[in-house]
Image (cartoon, rainbow, N blue to C red; front, top):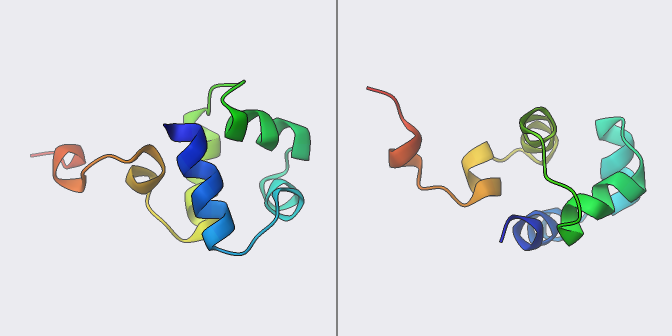
Length: 71
């Protein structure tokens, strides 16, 4: 599930919710809601997260890269 994956990635990178929220320009509560699945993760925030954590958006959504490539 996206919320579990988001939390796992953040913890693997050794960053707290508060630190990541500050870098994203959102409240820690809002980030917490994404991680708990209480709010849907918008694409623009997913892109910011991918940049901050140096991962692909596909990794956040657990999508195989070959299915995301365009012809």
